[in-house]
Length: 203
Ligand SMILES: *[C@@H]1O[C@H](CO)[C@@H](O)[C@H](O)[C@H]1NC(C)=O
Ligand SMILES: *[C@@H]1O[C@H](CO)[C@@H](O)[C@H](O)[C@H]1NC(C)=O
Ligand SMILES: *[C@@H]1O[C@H](CO)[C@@H](O)[C@H](O)[C@H]1NC(C)=O
Ligand SMILES: *[C@@H]1O[C@H](CO)[C@@H](O)[C@H](O)[C@H]1NC(C)=O
Ligand SMILES: *[C@@H]1O[C@H](CO)[C@@H](O)[C@H](O)[C@H]1NC(C)=O
Image (cartoon, rainbow, N blue to C red; front, side, top):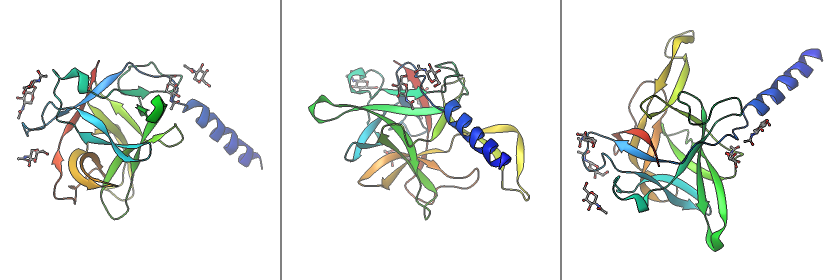
């Protein structure tokens, strides 16, 4: 019973600490790629369902400021906003019909029969995945545990994994979207995928 109470208390503590309510300055997300067609172009929110968006190629370049979509990175109350190497929630504010403002959070949509996860923005903040940004503004996810060896071990220093690709996906519509290749090894099974780096550029 005591351990049960402690476990509940620990969960409650975690929930409070992980309430990502400290927001960053607005930024755009740009791609770096060996492919000149998409190198230096912005990612934008794209319609995937009612008040649901994906992260798509826009073709917009840095001089085309009016076409950027603005994103945010919310970190926990104990962290400094705009800091690097801090996990936080990627946010997008959808303006829906009638001027309704809908703050939305990114969550990876995982299909167990694919090895690429599709970032999707859902209304509200109940569902999310966290991402970090490094000193170059590049978006990554930290890997703590190495299960490519048995038994699994902890990396001496967590890895900054940048498994971002642009692929033709069909979450709802067929679009060129950003994806996350699952795992620290291997290539996307989706043959359309091309490797990219995603960079946060303050607006
Ligand atoms: C992100 O921060 C803003 C400003 O504090 C807040 O309105 C929003 O609800 C936050 N999101 C989360 C995930 O708490
Ligand atoms: C470059 O990106 C464009 C747009 O996604 C794509 O159509 C084209 O095949 C890519 N080129 C190469 C060499 O990957
Ligand atoms: C990508 O863009 C960067 C910055 O503009 C540039 O330095 C680099 O040469 C470009 N690479 C390709 C392959 O277009
Ligand atoms: C932005 O620059 C690109 C070349 O990098 C050019 O093709 C495009 O017309 C420019 N757009 C505007 C709005 O100036
Ligand atoms: C975020 O949540 C913490 C804990 O509930 C609270 O102390 C803090 O004032 C909140 N910050 C904002 C910006 O809402």
